[in-house]
Image (cartoon, rainbow, N blue to C red; front, side, top):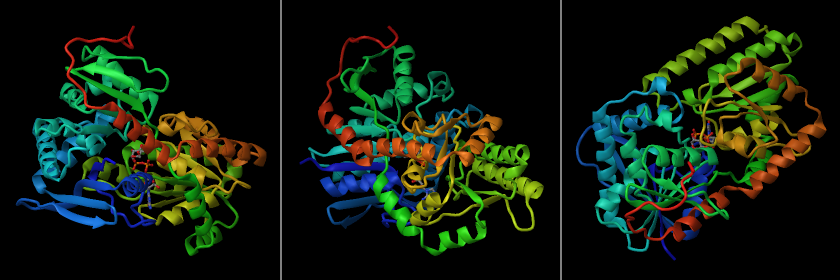
Length: 477
Ligand code: GDG
Protein backbone atom coordinates (compact mmCIF):
# COMPACT_ATOMS: atom_id res chain seq x y z
CA UNK A 1 0.00 0.00 0.00
CA UNK A 2 1.23 3.52 -0.79
CA UNK A 3 2.53 5.59 2.06
CA UNK A 4 0.58 8.75 2.84
CA UNK A 5 2.64 11.90 3.21
CA UNK A 6 0.80 14.78 4.84
CA UNK A 7 2.28 18.23 4.38
CA UNK A 8 0.88 21.14 6.35
CA UNK A 9 2.25 24.43 7.60
CA UNK A 10 2.18 23.30 11.23
CA UNK A 11 2.52 19.71 12.29
CA UNK A 12 -0.09 19.42 15.02
CA UNK A 13 1.35 18.47 18.38
CA UNK A 14 -0.49 15.25 19.03
CA UNK A 15 -1.37 15.23 22.68
CA UNK A 16 -4.63 13.44 22.11
CA UNK A 17 -7.45 15.24 23.92
CA UNK A 18 -5.11 18.13 24.69
CA UNK A 19 -5.86 21.76 23.96
CA UNK A 20 -4.35 21.87 20.48
CA UNK A 21 -6.07 18.76 19.07
CA UNK A 22 -8.69 20.17 16.68
CA UNK A 23 -10.78 18.10 14.29
CA UNK A 24 -8.30 18.41 11.46
CA UNK A 25 -5.40 17.25 13.62
CA UNK A 26 -7.35 14.24 14.81
CA UNK A 27 -8.61 13.35 11.30
CA UNK A 28 -5.21 13.65 9.67
CA UNK A 29 -3.52 11.73 12.46
CA UNK A 30 -6.05 8.90 12.20
CA UNK A 31 -5.52 8.74 8.44
CA UNK A 32 -1.81 8.38 9.04
CA UNK A 33 -2.20 5.76 11.76
CA UNK A 34 -4.30 3.59 9.43
CA UNK A 35 -2.14 3.83 6.33
CA UNK A 36 1.20 4.52 7.98
CA UNK A 37 3.16 7.44 6.68
CA UNK A 38 4.67 10.76 7.44
CA UNK A 39 3.56 14.22 8.55
CA UNK A 40 5.90 16.95 7.34
CA UNK A 41 5.90 20.65 8.09
CA UNK A 42 7.06 23.56 10.21
CA UNK A 43 7.84 22.76 13.83
CA UNK A 44 6.56 26.13 15.04
CA UNK A 45 10.09 27.20 16.03
CA UNK A 46 11.46 30.52 14.78
CA UNK A 47 15.25 30.66 14.73
CA UNK A 48 17.15 33.97 14.67
CA UNK A 49 19.31 32.77 11.74
CA UNK A 50 21.27 29.77 10.51
CA UNK A 51 20.29 26.64 8.64
CA UNK A 52 17.34 24.80 10.24
CA UNK A 53 17.62 21.02 10.30
CA UNK A 54 14.85 18.46 10.03
CA UNK A 55 13.90 16.60 13.16
CA UNK A 56 12.41 13.15 12.55
CA UNK A 57 10.43 11.38 15.23
CA UNK A 58 8.77 7.97 14.88
CA UNK A 59 5.56 7.30 16.77
CA UNK A 60 4.20 3.88 15.90
CA UNK A 61 3.46 3.76 12.16
CA UNK A 62 3.70 7.56 11.85
CA UNK A 63 6.85 9.57 11.25
CA UNK A 64 6.78 13.25 12.22
CA UNK A 65 9.29 15.29 10.22
CA UNK A 66 9.47 18.92 11.30
CA UNK A 67 11.74 21.84 10.62
CA UNK A 68 12.13 25.36 12.04
CA UNK A 69 11.96 28.61 10.09
CA UNK A 70 14.45 31.45 10.27
CA UNK A 71 13.02 34.81 11.30
CA UNK A 72 13.05 36.32 7.79
CA UNK A 73 11.20 33.34 6.34
CA UNK A 74 8.67 33.38 9.16
CA UNK A 75 8.05 37.10 8.56
CA UNK A 76 7.69 36.86 4.78
CA UNK A 77 6.09 33.45 4.29
CA UNK A 78 3.94 33.13 7.41
CA UNK A 79 3.14 36.57 8.84
CA UNK A 80 3.49 38.27 5.49
CA UNK A 81 2.04 36.67 2.39
CA UNK A 82 0.12 33.82 4.07
CA UNK A 83 -1.53 35.77 6.84
CA UNK A 84 -1.46 39.43 5.81
CA UNK A 85 -2.34 38.83 2.14
CA UNK A 86 -3.98 35.45 1.52
CA UNK A 87 -5.92 35.03 4.77
CA UNK A 88 -7.81 38.36 4.56
CA UNK A 89 -8.33 38.10 0.77
CA UNK A 90 -9.67 34.56 0.92
CA UNK A 91 -12.02 35.65 3.74
CA UNK A 92 -13.36 38.48 1.59
CA UNK A 93 -11.60 41.17 3.63
CA UNK A 94 -10.00 43.03 0.73
CA UNK A 95 -9.86 46.07 3.05
CA UNK A 96 -7.32 44.26 5.26
CA UNK A 97 -5.13 42.90 2.47
CA UNK A 98 -1.52 44.01 2.70
CA UNK A 99 0.77 43.15 -0.14
CA UNK A 100 4.53 43.30 -0.43
CA UNK A 101 6.12 41.59 -3.40
CA UNK A 102 9.16 40.69 -1.28
CA UNK A 103 6.82 38.74 1.00
CA UNK A 104 5.44 36.89 -2.01
CA UNK A 105 9.01 36.07 -3.10
CA UNK A 106 9.65 34.83 0.44
CA UNK A 107 6.47 32.74 0.33
CA UNK A 108 7.59 31.07 -2.91
CA UNK A 109 11.16 30.70 -1.64
CA UNK A 110 10.03 28.95 1.55
CA UNK A 111 7.70 26.65 -0.40
CA UNK A 112 10.61 25.69 -2.67
CA UNK A 113 12.93 25.19 0.28
CA UNK A 114 10.40 23.08 2.20
CA UNK A 115 9.77 20.97 -0.91
CA UNK A 116 13.51 20.42 -1.28
CA UNK A 117 13.70 19.28 2.34
CA UNK A 118 10.95 16.76 1.70
CA UNK A 119 12.33 15.29 -1.56
CA UNK A 120 15.04 13.06 0.01
CA UNK A 121 12.43 11.56 2.35
CA UNK A 122 10.07 10.52 -0.47
CA UNK A 123 9.59 7.08 -2.03
CA UNK A 124 8.30 6.60 -5.59
CA UNK A 125 4.85 5.29 -4.64
CA UNK A 126 4.13 7.79 -1.84
CA UNK A 127 0.88 9.73 -2.14
CA UNK A 128 1.31 13.34 -1.03
CA UNK A 129 -1.54 15.36 0.51
CA UNK A 130 -0.76 19.05 1.01
CA UNK A 131 -2.94 21.21 3.26
CA UNK A 132 -3.94 24.84 3.09
CA UNK A 133 -3.11 28.28 1.79
CA UNK A 134 0.44 28.46 3.12
CA UNK A 135 1.49 25.80 0.62
CA UNK A 136 -0.16 26.68 -2.69
CA UNK A 137 3.16 26.58 -4.64
CA UNK A 138 4.29 23.32 -3.02
CA UNK A 139 3.40 20.93 -5.86
CA UNK A 140 4.99 23.21 -8.43
CA UNK A 141 8.16 23.19 -6.35
CA UNK A 142 8.06 19.40 -6.00
CA UNK A 143 7.51 18.99 -9.75
CA UNK A 144 10.48 21.29 -10.42
CA UNK A 145 12.55 18.96 -8.26
CA UNK A 146 11.49 16.02 -10.44
CA UNK A 147 8.84 14.49 -8.17
CA UNK A 148 6.34 12.41 -10.18
CA UNK A 149 4.14 11.21 -7.29
CA UNK A 150 0.43 11.95 -6.98
CA UNK A 151 -0.03 15.23 -5.14
CA UNK A 152 -3.33 16.50 -3.77
CA UNK A 153 -4.23 19.76 -2.08
CA UNK A 154 -7.02 20.62 0.34
CA UNK A 155 -7.94 24.23 1.02
CA UNK A 156 -9.34 24.63 4.55
CA UNK A 157 -10.44 28.23 4.03
CA UNK A 158 -12.86 29.67 1.45
CA UNK A 159 -11.82 30.07 -2.18
CA UNK A 160 -12.94 33.62 -2.98
CA UNK A 161 -14.99 34.84 -5.90
CA UNK A 162 -12.81 35.90 -8.84
CA UNK A 163 -13.36 39.61 -8.33
CA UNK A 164 -12.02 39.27 -4.79
CA UNK A 165 -9.11 37.04 -5.77
CA UNK A 166 -8.06 39.65 -8.32
CA UNK A 167 -7.20 41.88 -5.35
CA UNK A 168 -4.19 39.64 -4.70
CA UNK A 169 -1.60 40.87 -7.19
CA UNK A 170 -0.02 37.48 -8.01
CA UNK A 171 -3.44 35.79 -8.38
CA UNK A 172 -2.49 34.24 -11.69
CA UNK A 173 0.71 32.69 -10.34
CA UNK A 174 -1.26 31.28 -7.43
CA UNK A 175 -3.90 29.63 -9.59
CA UNK A 176 -1.27 28.38 -12.01
CA UNK A 177 0.53 26.83 -9.02
CA UNK A 178 -2.69 25.17 -7.88
CA UNK A 179 -2.90 23.55 -11.30
CA UNK A 180 0.34 21.66 -10.58
CA UNK A 181 -1.60 19.45 -8.16
CA UNK A 182 -3.44 16.35 -9.41
CA UNK A 183 -6.48 16.89 -7.20
CA UNK A 184 -7.81 20.03 -5.53
CA UNK A 185 -10.23 19.75 -2.62
CA UNK A 186 -12.44 22.60 -1.44
CA UNK A 187 -14.72 22.75 1.58
CA UNK A 188 -17.94 23.50 -0.30
CA UNK A 189 -19.53 23.59 -3.74
CA UNK A 190 -19.55 27.42 -3.77
CA UNK A 191 -15.76 27.38 -3.23
CA UNK A 192 -15.36 24.90 -6.08
CA UNK A 193 -17.56 27.09 -8.29
CA UNK A 194 -15.43 30.15 -7.50
CA UNK A 195 -12.31 28.27 -8.52
CA UNK A 196 -13.88 27.00 -11.76
CA UNK A 197 -15.15 30.48 -12.49
CA UNK A 198 -11.61 31.85 -12.28
CA UNK A 199 -10.31 29.03 -14.48
CA UNK A 200 -12.91 29.73 -17.16
CA UNK A 201 -13.09 33.52 -17.08
CA UNK A 202 -9.61 34.61 -16.00
CA UNK A 203 -7.34 31.74 -17.06
CA UNK A 204 -8.90 30.82 -20.39
CA UNK A 205 -9.24 27.23 -19.22
CA UNK A 206 -12.13 24.79 -18.97
CA UNK A 207 -13.92 23.05 -16.15
CA UNK A 208 -16.30 20.20 -16.91
CA UNK A 209 -19.59 20.05 -15.08
CA UNK A 210 -19.12 17.17 -12.62
CA UNK A 211 -21.21 14.04 -13.23
CA UNK A 212 -22.03 10.97 -11.12
CA UNK A 213 -20.26 12.33 -8.08
CA UNK A 214 -16.94 12.41 -9.94
CA UNK A 215 -14.61 15.37 -9.53
CA UNK A 216 -14.67 18.18 -12.05
CA UNK A 217 -11.97 17.92 -14.72
CA UNK A 218 -10.07 21.18 -15.07
CA UNK A 219 -7.79 22.07 -17.95
CA UNK A 220 -5.66 25.16 -17.63
CA UNK A 221 -2.05 26.31 -17.84
CA UNK A 222 -1.22 23.27 -19.95
CA UNK A 223 -2.36 20.77 -17.33
CA UNK A 224 -5.34 18.55 -16.64
CA UNK A 225 -6.34 18.05 -13.02
CA UNK A 226 -9.39 17.28 -10.91
CA UNK A 227 -11.27 19.33 -8.35
CA UNK A 228 -14.17 18.65 -6.00
CA UNK A 229 -15.77 19.69 -2.72
CA UNK A 230 -14.94 17.55 0.32
CA UNK A 231 -16.63 19.11 3.35
CA UNK A 232 -14.52 18.30 6.41
CA UNK A 233 -16.34 16.64 9.28
CA UNK A 234 -15.85 15.61 12.89
CA UNK A 235 -16.33 12.38 14.84
CA UNK A 236 -19.73 13.26 16.33
CA UNK A 237 -20.06 10.24 18.60
CA UNK A 238 -16.61 10.71 20.09
CA UNK A 239 -17.42 14.35 20.81
CA UNK A 240 -20.74 13.33 22.39
CA UNK A 241 -18.84 10.91 24.62
CA UNK A 242 -16.29 13.58 25.52
CA UNK A 243 -19.09 15.99 26.42
CA UNK A 244 -20.85 13.41 28.60
CA UNK A 245 -17.62 12.57 30.38
CA UNK A 246 -16.81 16.24 30.97
CA UNK A 247 -20.22 17.09 32.40
CA UNK A 248 -19.31 16.12 35.94
CA UNK A 249 -15.91 17.85 35.78
CA UNK A 250 -15.07 20.85 37.94
CA UNK A 251 -15.07 23.54 35.22
CA UNK A 252 -18.62 22.70 34.17
CA UNK A 253 -19.89 22.36 37.74
CA UNK A 254 -18.39 25.75 38.56
CA UNK A 255 -19.94 27.29 35.48
CA UNK A 256 -23.38 25.89 36.30
CA UNK A 257 -23.13 27.13 39.87
CA UNK A 258 -22.29 30.66 38.76
CA UNK A 259 -25.09 30.68 36.19
CA UNK A 260 -27.77 30.26 38.87
CA UNK A 261 -30.17 28.60 36.40
CA UNK A 262 -29.74 31.33 33.80
CA UNK A 263 -29.62 30.18 30.20
CA UNK A 264 -26.23 29.95 28.54
CA UNK A 265 -25.15 31.07 25.06
CA UNK A 266 -21.75 29.61 24.09
CA UNK A 267 -19.17 30.62 21.49
CA UNK A 268 -15.64 29.36 20.89
CA UNK A 269 -13.36 30.80 18.22
CA UNK A 270 -9.73 31.60 17.67
CA UNK A 271 -9.59 35.38 18.12
CA UNK A 272 -9.73 36.22 14.43
CA UNK A 273 -11.41 39.09 12.56
CA UNK A 274 -13.03 36.56 10.21
CA UNK A 275 -15.11 35.13 13.04
CA UNK A 276 -17.54 38.06 13.33
CA UNK A 277 -17.06 38.54 17.07
CA UNK A 278 -17.80 42.26 17.23
CA UNK A 279 -21.10 41.90 15.34
CA UNK A 280 -21.94 38.90 17.53
CA UNK A 281 -21.39 40.90 20.73
CA UNK A 282 -23.54 43.72 19.36
CA UNK A 283 -26.36 41.33 18.49
CA UNK A 284 -26.32 39.99 22.04
CA UNK A 285 -26.47 43.59 23.23
CA UNK A 286 -29.44 44.18 20.90
CA UNK A 287 -31.22 41.19 22.44
CA UNK A 288 -30.83 42.66 25.93
CA UNK A 289 -31.85 46.09 24.66
CA UNK A 290 -35.02 44.89 22.95
CA UNK A 291 -36.06 42.14 25.38
CA UNK A 292 -35.80 43.43 28.94
CA UNK A 293 -37.18 40.07 30.08
CA UNK A 294 -33.91 38.44 29.00
CA UNK A 295 -31.82 40.64 31.29
CA UNK A 296 -30.30 38.68 34.16
CA UNK A 297 -31.84 35.54 32.59
CA UNK A 298 -29.12 34.70 30.08
CA UNK A 299 -25.31 34.74 30.02
CA UNK A 300 -23.09 34.71 26.98
CA UNK A 301 -19.69 33.01 27.27
CA UNK A 302 -17.19 33.74 24.52
CA UNK A 303 -13.97 31.72 24.65
CA UNK A 304 -11.48 33.22 22.20
CA UNK A 305 -7.92 31.90 22.53
CA UNK A 306 -5.17 34.08 21.07
CA UNK A 307 -3.87 33.46 17.57
CA UNK A 308 -1.30 35.28 15.37
CA UNK A 309 -0.96 37.73 18.25
CA UNK A 310 2.16 39.30 16.71
CA UNK A 311 0.12 40.78 13.83
CA UNK A 312 -1.48 44.24 13.93
CA UNK A 313 -4.87 43.15 12.61
CA UNK A 314 -5.12 40.63 15.45
CA UNK A 315 -4.04 43.14 18.08
CA UNK A 316 -6.70 45.49 16.71
CA UNK A 317 -9.53 42.96 16.93
CA UNK A 318 -8.49 42.10 20.47
CA UNK A 319 -8.62 45.73 21.58
CA UNK A 320 -11.94 46.24 19.79
CA UNK A 321 -13.49 43.19 21.42
CA UNK A 322 -12.26 44.09 24.88
CA UNK A 323 -13.84 47.51 24.35
CA UNK A 324 -17.15 46.05 23.22
CA UNK A 325 -17.45 43.51 26.04
CA UNK A 326 -16.55 46.18 28.61
CA UNK A 327 -19.06 48.61 27.15
CA UNK A 328 -21.90 46.10 26.97
CA UNK A 329 -21.22 44.73 30.44
CA UNK A 330 -21.01 48.28 31.83
CA UNK A 331 -24.38 49.01 30.27
CA UNK A 332 -26.30 45.93 31.44
CA UNK A 333 -24.42 44.18 34.26
CA UNK A 334 -25.92 43.94 37.71
CA UNK A 335 -24.27 43.14 41.02
CA UNK A 336 -24.95 39.44 40.55
CA UNK A 337 -24.79 39.19 36.74
CA UNK A 338 -22.15 39.77 34.07
CA UNK A 339 -23.88 39.47 30.68
CA UNK A 340 -20.76 38.64 28.62
CA UNK A 341 -17.91 36.52 29.92
CA UNK A 342 -15.17 37.06 27.41
CA UNK A 343 -12.24 34.70 27.99
CA UNK A 344 -9.04 35.14 26.00
CA UNK A 345 -7.62 31.69 26.77
CA UNK A 346 -7.55 28.05 25.61
CA UNK A 347 -9.44 25.27 27.33
CA UNK A 348 -9.15 21.50 27.19
CA UNK A 349 -11.18 19.90 24.45
CA UNK A 350 -13.27 17.99 26.94
CA UNK A 351 -14.14 21.15 28.84
CA UNK A 352 -15.31 22.83 25.64
CA UNK A 353 -17.46 19.84 24.68
CA UNK A 354 -19.04 19.75 28.14
CA UNK A 355 -19.72 23.50 28.07
CA UNK A 356 -21.40 23.09 24.68
CA UNK A 357 -23.60 20.40 26.20
CA UNK A 358 -24.46 22.56 29.20
CA UNK A 359 -25.52 25.49 27.01
CA UNK A 360 -28.86 26.40 25.42
CA UNK A 361 -27.52 28.11 22.32
CA UNK A 362 -24.38 27.62 20.20
CA UNK A 363 -23.66 31.02 18.70
CA UNK A 364 -21.41 30.59 15.63
CA UNK A 365 -21.46 33.62 13.37
CA UNK A 366 -18.28 34.03 11.31
CA UNK A 367 -18.25 36.64 8.55
CA UNK A 368 -16.61 33.95 6.41
CA UNK A 369 -15.35 30.49 7.26
CA UNK A 370 -14.20 27.58 5.14
CA UNK A 371 -16.19 25.13 7.23
CA UNK A 372 -16.22 25.96 10.97
CA UNK A 373 -15.72 22.84 13.01
CA UNK A 374 -17.03 24.49 16.17
CA UNK A 375 -20.54 24.44 14.67
CA UNK A 376 -20.25 20.70 14.08
CA UNK A 377 -18.71 20.10 17.50
CA UNK A 378 -21.49 22.08 19.16
CA UNK A 379 -24.22 19.90 17.66
CA UNK A 380 -22.28 16.70 18.36
CA UNK A 381 -21.90 17.58 22.04
CA UNK A 382 -25.63 18.02 22.73
CA UNK A 383 -27.75 15.90 25.01
CA UNK A 384 -30.25 14.18 22.66
CA UNK A 385 -32.96 14.48 25.32
CA UNK A 386 -32.49 18.21 25.79
CA UNK A 387 -30.42 19.62 22.93
CA UNK A 388 -29.38 23.23 22.52
CA UNK A 389 -29.98 25.25 19.35
CA UNK A 390 -27.30 26.22 16.84
CA UNK A 391 -27.38 29.80 15.51
CA UNK A 392 -25.11 29.69 12.46
CA UNK A 393 -23.80 32.19 9.93
CA UNK A 394 -24.79 31.54 6.35
CA UNK A 395 -21.17 32.29 5.44
CA UNK A 396 -19.73 29.32 7.34
CA UNK A 397 -19.18 26.33 5.06
CA UNK A 398 -21.03 24.29 7.69
CA UNK A 399 -24.26 26.13 6.78
CA UNK A 400 -24.33 24.14 3.52
CA UNK A 401 -24.92 20.98 5.55
CA UNK A 402 -26.49 21.93 8.89
CA UNK A 403 -30.06 22.59 7.83
CA UNK A 404 -31.34 22.26 11.37
CA UNK A 405 -29.52 25.41 12.48
CA UNK A 406 -31.07 28.87 12.65
CA UNK A 407 -29.21 30.46 9.76
CA UNK A 408 -28.31 34.14 10.13
CA UNK A 409 -26.51 36.85 8.23
CA UNK A 410 -23.60 37.80 10.54
CA UNK A 411 -23.81 41.52 9.77
CA UNK A 412 -27.55 41.71 10.44
CA UNK A 413 -27.53 42.67 14.12
CA UNK A 414 -31.32 42.70 14.47
CA UNK A 415 -31.63 39.41 12.60
CA UNK A 416 -29.11 37.75 14.91
CA UNK A 417 -30.81 39.17 18.02
CA UNK A 418 -34.13 37.73 16.76
CA UNK A 419 -32.50 34.35 16.13
CA UNK A 420 -31.10 34.33 19.67
CA UNK A 421 -34.56 35.07 21.07
CA UNK A 422 -36.07 32.31 18.92
CA UNK A 423 -33.38 29.85 20.01
CA UNK A 424 -33.80 30.66 23.70
CA UNK A 425 -37.57 30.09 23.46
CA UNK A 426 -37.59 27.06 21.15
CA UNK A 427 -39.81 24.19 22.34
CA UNK A 428 -38.17 20.85 23.14
CA UNK A 429 -39.79 18.92 20.25
CA UNK A 430 -38.44 21.36 17.68
CA UNK A 431 -34.98 21.37 19.26
CA UNK A 432 -34.93 17.59 19.16
CA UNK A 433 -36.00 17.30 15.56
CA UNK A 434 -33.43 19.89 14.44
CA UNK A 435 -30.74 18.12 16.46
CA UNK A 436 -31.61 14.69 15.01
CA UNK A 437 -31.45 15.99 11.46
CA UNK A 438 -28.06 17.60 12.00
CA UNK A 439 -26.62 14.66 13.91
CA UNK A 440 -27.60 12.28 11.09
CA UNK A 441 -25.78 14.52 8.63
CA UNK A 442 -22.69 14.71 10.85
CA UNK A 443 -22.56 10.92 11.19
CA UNK A 444 -22.98 10.43 7.46
CA UNK A 445 -20.16 12.81 6.61
CA UNK A 446 -17.72 12.31 9.44
CA UNK A 447 -14.03 13.08 9.20
CA UNK A 448 -13.19 9.54 7.97
CA UNK A 449 -15.56 10.02 5.04
CA UNK A 450 -13.86 13.32 4.22
CA UNK A 451 -10.43 11.71 4.28
CA UNK A 452 -11.44 8.54 2.43
CA UNK A 453 -13.26 10.39 -0.34
CA UNK A 454 -10.29 12.66 -0.90
CA UNK A 455 -7.80 9.77 -0.86
CA UNK A 456 -9.98 7.69 -3.22
CA UNK A 457 -10.08 10.52 -5.76
CA UNK A 458 -6.38 11.28 -5.36
CA UNK A 459 -5.46 7.63 -5.93
CA UNK A 460 -7.68 7.67 -9.04
CA UNK A 461 -6.26 10.96 -10.31
CA UNK A 462 -3.19 9.16 -11.62
CA UNK A 463 -0.26 10.81 -13.26
CA UNK A 464 -1.44 13.58 -15.50
CA UNK A 465 -0.04 14.35 -18.90
CA UNK A 466 0.17 17.90 -20.20
CA UNK A 467 -2.58 18.83 -22.68
CA UNK A 468 -2.17 20.78 -25.86
CA UNK A 469 -5.68 21.98 -26.44
CA UNK A 470 -8.65 22.66 -24.25
CA UNK A 471 -11.52 20.22 -24.36
CA UNK A 472 -14.73 19.68 -22.42
CA UNK A 473 -17.71 21.80 -21.69
CA UNK A 474 -17.00 25.05 -19.98
CA UNK A 475 -19.07 25.85 -16.91
CA UNK A 476 -19.73 29.18 -18.56
CA UNK A 477 -21.57 27.50 -21.42
C1 GDG B 1 -9.68 26.32 9.70
C2 GDG B 1 -10.72 27.03 8.84
C3 GDG B 1 -12.10 24.95 8.92
C4 GDG B 1 -10.81 26.51 19.46
N1 GDG B 1 -10.54 27.01 20.68
C5 GDG B 1 -10.08 26.00 21.42
C6 GDG B 1 -10.07 24.84 20.63
N2 GDG B 1 -10.52 25.18 19.45
C7 GDG B 1 -10.71 24.21 18.36
C8 GDG B 1 -12.17 24.05 18.01
C9 GDG B 1 -12.05 23.51 16.59
C10 GDG B 1 -10.80 24.20 16.08
O1 GDG B 1 -10.05 24.65 17.22
C11 GDG B 1 -11.15 25.43 15.28
O2 GDG B 1 -11.63 24.99 14.05
P1 GDG B 1 -12.60 25.90 13.16
O3 GDG B 1 -13.02 25.06 12.03
O4 GDG B 1 -13.74 26.39 13.97
O5 GDG B 1 -11.77 27.18 12.70
P2 GDG B 1 -10.24 27.48 12.20
O6 GDG B 1 -9.27 27.36 13.30
O7 GDG B 1 -10.29 28.83 11.57
O8 GDG B 1 -9.93 26.33 11.11
C12 GDG B 1 -12.11 26.46 9.15
C13 GDG B 1 -10.95 24.28 9.64
O9 GDG B 1 -9.71 24.90 9.33
C14 GDG B 1 -10.85 22.79 9.32
O10 GDG B 1 -10.83 22.58 7.94
O11 GDG B 1 -13.32 24.43 9.42
O12 GDG B 1 -13.09 27.07 8.33
O13 GDG B 1 -10.70 28.44 9.06
O14 GDG B 1 -11.82 22.12 16.59
O15 GDG B 1 -12.79 23.19 18.92
N3 GDG B 1 -9.69 23.64 21.08
C15 GDG B 1 -9.29 23.56 22.37
N4 GDG B 1 -9.26 24.66 23.19
C16 GDG B 1 -9.65 25.89 22.76
O16 GDG B 1 -9.65 26.85 23.55
N5 GDG B 1 -8.94 22.38 22.86
